[in-house]
Length: 259
Image 1 (tube, helix red, strand yellow):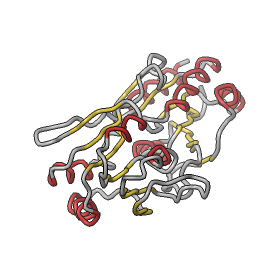
Image 2 (image 1 turned 30 degrees about the vertical axis):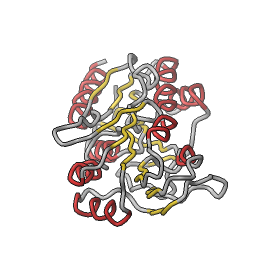
Image 3 (image 1 turned 180 degrees about the vertical axis):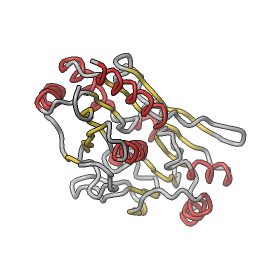
């Protein structure tokens, strides 16, 4: 092989940004990042970025072939099940090695009061009458709680919901999660929060709200991650951090160089 190894990173997470910084500084790789466009103002990446879908698994496979991608890294959100499934199918069709970079889920610890559920409908049903929940579930699925007219919700999201999205009653905050526990605890207390509803995204981004809930003695209704098969597990390899992802990519580059 001559020249750097061409990579595509499916991004949208802090791990993807950290990986992009490592790849941008390594001359063995020529990488770019693809974002689905779910966030209107995404954080900056150290690599070239394309935004928007590919047209499903077949469109992604066609892109991989046409651009000469020799390695695909799926570093999307743990709940982006459809994108991950498309990555598996596309990598198989294009004959491109696939790596899934997915941080481990959060685990409850002493002092936590977690009630795990399988979907957001179950999360909405688990809230008692008249609850004042903090809904940290994102703008796309907030409407799942709109049918609960008895709730007084604190809702935080990065971008505003669409005008046609029904919202539950309460207060809307447009902001990224804070990594400061005191800040998160103050936000919860200011609303008189009785419950926290969250997706088990894992990682340090967003973990402060769980520590704040523990400090305040609040129950957490935690949405389990999709089953591994739904998220594309079983194809390619899986790692839990950027260091392991770089090790896998370095091996891939070494094999390509000796081919």
